Amino acid sequence: MAASLSRPCFISLHVPYRQRWAQDLAASFRFHPVAVRETPRVRQLALRRGAAVFLLNQRLAPSRAPSPDFLYDVDPQPALGTASNVCFEVEDVPGLCERLRGRGCSVPVPPTEVSDEGGSVTYGVVRSVVGNISHTLLDRSRYRGPFLPGFQPVQGAPHEAGDGVEITNFDHITYVCPRGGARAALDWYQRCFGFQRFLLSPQERLAEGYVLGGQGVGMLLLALQSAQGSSGPSCKLVLAESLSKDSPNQVDTFLAQHGGAGIQHVGLCTPDIVSTTRALQQAGVRFFMPPTTYYSQLGKEEEIRGAGQDPDMLAELGILLDTTVPGENKGPCTDGTESPSRNYLMQIFTHPIFSEETFFLELIDRRGAPGFGEGNIRALWKAVQVYMDQRQ
Ligand SMILES: O=C(O)C(=O)Cc1ccc(O)cc1
Image 1 (cartoon, rainbow, N blue to C red):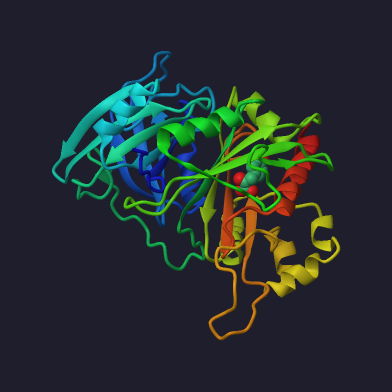
Image 2: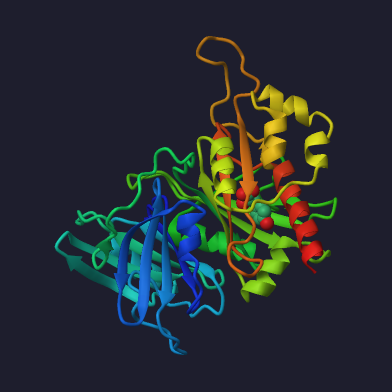
């Protein structure tokens, strides 16, 4: 039986000893500390916005050996900041770990029970076939506390309302795979986690994947989602592989600076990208500005107006809009009129958030469009190229 995995329960970030990133995530990205766990050697802080939770893991003392102290995770021993674990809620942790072991997967943390006064949870950790990524498989159906056993609630966490930032949940997680490795990753997530392939564009061929070529771009994308089951909404994974002959580019630079494959970015869903972008910019978050030609390209202004958005406002903030993505809810509106602009999406990408050109965040505002905008991906690719050329 295929595993039924929900939307991620949390995404774990590891920062090396003495790097202070928690403050950034809290102060700039407006994530709120909700729970903390501290041992003499490590600190784990859960930061939440809507249903999106990052678990920030940090050592409190230098050490060369992997630390067994990180609860609900394995220690990736990072030399630099990395997002290395995605936790999924599952119903039967022992059964799934057993099946995964039977399929040859490495299960560095076997099913383990943790409890406190709020109840108990069972979790195990399995290594993915991609880079340093692992997955915590968690059953917290028997737990009533604020986060997870072993964590203390952070008192006085601020209210989310009123700061202009609206982030509801994780939308997708994008991996950078090694050259030639995306297909093996796709097979692994299908075989081991029961994820299902979906096509990113009507032009995508199943056997080839979504190939973005020409105009200096060279990338293969393959997309998957978890089967939507009883355990909640599905999770989208995007696997990216460089086909580029040009350097520097976003994907090869990630591989070089991250020291191998891993999580490149996380898309955060917002129902109001304009207000959220503005509030985050004011709080100091830096976003990639697309090339100015993005907004002046033939038909773009009409496309943006047709979607009911203001081209000047989007250009001022650097927000990308694409109406060419396939829609979930095509068809006439309930009043019987045809609405040509119902399905579109808007995206904006932050600069890398650690000191290397690796992990970044994205805001995505989906208006009925489940895929990704090709024009937007191209614009991001070019913006990153300009940025890296300037930095070199
Ligand atoms: O558009 C998105 O959010 C994607 O996830 C697609 C993508 C994948 C890799 C990149 O380097 C840039 C964009």
